[in-house]
Length: 535
Image 1 (cartoon, one colour):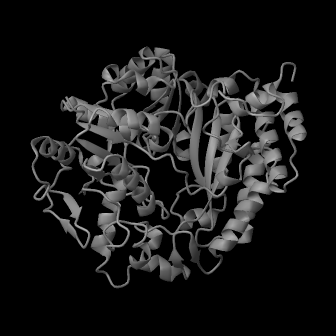
Image 2 (cartoon, helix red, strand yellow):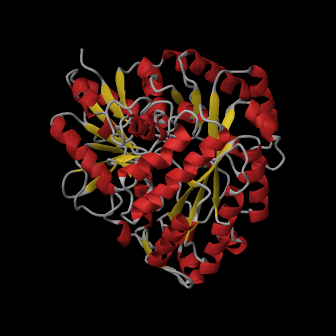
Image 3 (tube, one colour):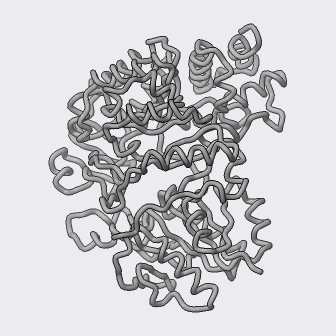
């Protein structure tokens, strides 16, 4: 029998971070702790295989969108195989093609441009010429929303036509069907049934097709109301989902906040907070399958609910052999006992701090203040919980002085010297369609013009913002950028002071490399005193 479908969760392409491309590399590889250890063991060279690589790291966790859809489709009795990261798993994909899949499914949760989608689907089409390619997810739905707004004379969709679907007919991806929905699982199931029955997609609701000259959209129906949450049956998932030792879970869905730079498409009907008993059961099921670390993928852990203290107490009492991390809004952590949070298994908190300038935070509609940020970060680091924080440079109202406040804030928190490690990723502001700041009223208020990476407003432009990102990167010395591919267990095997010194050394050497002055001997000597026995 043929396989019903191959599901592709991600391509593995990089983010919009301005600081990430500046990170240290060794022989073309990101200088992750396992790569550095390999380098030291082999006199300054990388020798494959690299022990601990692509496992036990936050980056190695399978994408939750793939897990969710795999679980959902298997629950509907479809025979589906999962590709987590396409470009890293081409060999596995080729093997699965030999099982003659009836369809190829692409989720666009982590796809952010038409070109990325086009390159992927072109390779799929070449590999499987007669197999229908079905595409759905957030990027498709965002493209549909932009198409709807293209009739508004003052809303700029023309700039987006090369990046989003449905706005032009040039260089369109070779997909056979687009599922246009905020919650498209039911439509996807019907599409797969039609493929199996040899029926047309022509009248499939909430979908679109492209014939080479124009897009055709079918009628819209409400497939969101009453859709509810779909529990993940971790015990039934295939072994390969757990092979890296790191899992992804969801404790809630949605975000009640309206940050002005955020272009995530939200629907309150899809918001939910998972019952604590269910979270405990899922974590136990995952632990029984060999998962040792869990990354919660919530936009805002449990929607920022005020029961984080009680949740921490419960998880601490359960003593589940799993350590975890999540994005948690800083204000949610104000009244939480960080020691209890640590006993609950939390080893890292991701914080969307964005800026340390009060006016920029107000412009962003962040509802936060830098003083509270310092208090929260110090409390977490003091409890031995790592803080990985994201900052945005260049939002309207940003000046050189406001950037200086953000840099000084990072210098303050990186100097605490606590057991936890502070890291960061610094993004230049993106003027993204569908975000509140993209609206005509905001453009007028700030003298804002442009699109995505290229923009200017009354106090800064995109080139200046990137200069400030590089300035921050080169000026900071007591911390370093986020490296989500680091093997967690190798880091935890180090003393707290060694972890801090490793992060500082890696960042210091990255700046030497930027100047073209890093030789192999300096690289080895820099890390040897920290990582080798007796360091």
